[in-house]
Length: 315
Picture (tube, rainbow, N blue to C red):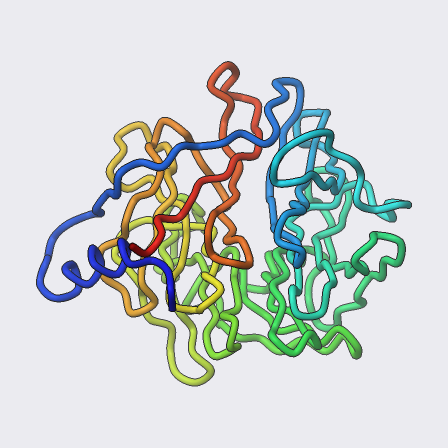
């Protein structure tokens, strides 16, 4: 790769001998706000294949309902993505950048009933995927490289949440984890399809608590392994498949999340934002130069806007 030298140097030193550390920090990069409206909630951004359009979900009623929106990376006026929204709420959008399609979670108010929907690049053709043998609470679709299926979370599975692979043509689902062993959250499929990173926790007989999740890697065969010790959620793969961005409250007594990056092989994560930013759901740009995420607005913590931050370049 021609990028990430700063990360390679820092994480390389960590993997070669540093032990016991919670995280290491790079010089903080400036945060650029894209949306900053104190009357709305803007969450779950994703960068489209063109590299500059960002899709996201916006709520104007405190999170009861959500609309898929799009905006340019440089900012400006946000506009609806779906021409005729088929559902009350559309959230957790995820692009197949190779096939120029968007999968998202569509459902009723407050995520009571959800399903996976797929849209074309213009938001004019939208299809609900009739998934078989899963509960009516299917969320967080992430595309496989061939564009034929997505990995999602069945939050209503018997015994607890589980990862499933959903065939978009047939609706057939295949369970990938067992609730008796793991309770899971948001997944993300690696660019080569060989790994699924997910937020989750071992099932120790206690109720699922997403604040206790860690970042795990599930290979094509074999059991999941922990990427880095410590709390972590909302993973996303870098375009080269060597790094994971995620959020974590580690190191903050107030429990505020910051953005971290960790090598696929594991080790001590690198912290990219201050905890005061209260960041969530980082997603890489297709060129790997920056991350988009949502964060609490400094002027009103209950409101959320979208922001971007640069990833340190190779020198």
